[in-house]
Amino acid sequence: MRKLQLIIFMFSFIILITISLININSAGAGTICSSYSNLPWHQLSIGVISCNKKISSCAEDNCQDMLDIFEKCENLSAELTKVDGPSKDTILYLLNSKNIECINIALINILLREIFSKDILDNILELQNVNADIFANNAINQTLNKLDAKHVIEYKDKILRNLKNKSDYDWYILSIMPTLEKIPQDDIFEVYANLLRKNNKAIRLAVYLTIRKYGSEYINKVKEILTKEGDNDALLFLNKPVGLGGSTRE
Image (cartoon, rainbow, N blue to C red; front, side, top):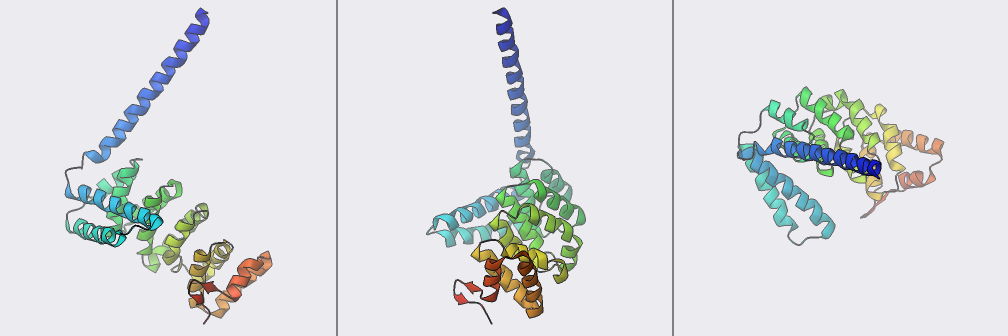
């Protein structure tokens, strides 16, 4: 009996220590951003993030005031770019904080202030590889979409790696499409073929509208891959692509 009581006591003690450590770590994470809470860039960043999340929620719920919320987001974003922002060291510190609120604050400032230095881009691409937060991933993709072709080519391997790792998320694919257009055609037609295999009308249409810019020869290369794989459904779409407004064939 005493042995059982001792085991229970030890087990309870271990649980208490674990809970205490979790609370300490959580408290530490919460104070990372709160130390900047009086600064205008912090307050406005929180407002922009909250506003954008409301837009995403409204898109699902068909909110009547979505245009008002969108206008508010635009105004807050404009205000944010007018005030002094966090230093690059602060941004890197927030990105590596492992606290999603702090990470998102850093990302919205990178996006709106167009901070495209090598250390920042390296950091956000590695972050995207392990982070599943929808807002964070979209913010990173929107940042990548703003890069010129030279930068996109430089980071091509990491961009395609992250796309492969998140290929199950349709929203991710759609948000990265403008970046994919800047990757050399010969390096990416297999990627487009894989995306056409997804049974998602929006993604298929986005891919088609992209690859038709490269001409029929490029489309035929994609068709060859699909033919080799025996993907008749994707081939049927390419031969007769239909969007929401009817046929998209030229």
